[in-house]
Length: 457
Length: 165
Image (cartoon, rainbow over all chains, first blue to last red; front, side):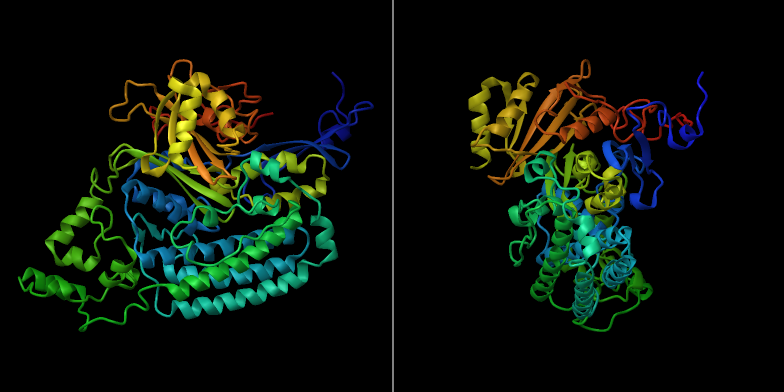
């Protein structure tokens, strides 16, 4: 047996053993700070050129699809939060939209606007994270800090509405969990203003920056034909010059009522992806502002008749049989239930009793409400769409996010499949990397915006 | 060109090999015979009237416990196609028995089918004939069974594996 040379121990088998093919095999990941989650790229290098790569995924597999089959329809909502954890609201709404299509119900007008508004806020968060992280990997740590600062403004909005920053579980089959809080519109406008300032600053820092341009232009390019063949959608496809956007092509909710453009670039390289994402954030803010301006229903929590009573005396009155007018009495709800009083829920949740949980006042104030509540909560009951199958796409931050839901008529989904928007670009990653330099692996990988949660499900 | 027209075009080309066709929930769907699948996918892609140039999604469903379909073919492989020029969607399905669960691969038509078929193999144990590299995609090589099959218990534990050298 040949003695292992020291060089071989450090550089791997086959290195330095004779002349000719001295290609070096390098594992990039799974544990690597630039791998955004966990993924393994096995690269074969000839000098500094990447000759061949193999991408290994699945490190974050959590059996999302199997787990969805085990519970009721609304039980899958928290799992969808964890698909794309940078923009979880879009996943929530996408899944809910698929089940709503099965049920044949329409969500309320206000709910549609809220969904559009919150989706766009999420999209901006996603793009901010993507650009910030890939700029940081090229040495522009300032940009990363600025972008995270801007994301903070938006995540505060998300927190105001949903009560959480990441695992928001805000969507519901038939609507959303709660209405927007008071004064949200002003806050949002202020946050957009601040985000715009940050974007302007980043634009001046990066877009014309010699180092950034040298590292990004012409790197990791993919043609439009190849992108289509690989099923790539979203910013990557638009950076290759194809103006495909689900929001424009097959509008859902109120995307056909707002004005926006679909930015494209002809070159398909990393720099084009950066420019497309920067332009999309501005368009998203445009959509969000129009949604805020056009949202029907106006402010909430201001038009109660009478003084709210506390829940304990509400229940007492019911027990004593003093039920006259009880149903119409407003109740002081716990702060946890902010935005979920009867009037608010009427606006944001469908009125279909097969699907929507009744507001707490109704549940505790009337036998019909209580029965309705139990019919949706008890084991073996719940939302029961008719047997059938639907595929509903929405435009996620990384491209077309589709949910394929099969129902057998029972209270549990028979099959839920998520079409993750970042799987096709990852499948095409070898093509992006091969022939390039090893130093370009990281920026190209960053521009693909891999999100482990939705990639591995 | 609307959904009905797409299905009519498929029927006119493949005749009885189109086992079922309809537009439930407004989504054109055709169930094809396995024998013509490869040809049908090719036809959908190159026919200028159809122009389905994008394979959006490829997955499977295990109908083992579906009420009323327990005795039928166990699996259904589902293709979701999208046409950029016509802005249309189409769902194609093939039914596959458990014995000899093999479907012709779509990899020569769309490179993305490579990974999507690997995932279906991984999760359902359906083989794809002509696939260049049918490995598991999400699970590891030592994993036993195919987790999205309906007879795979959700609580099942797998033996721990050590590092591979």
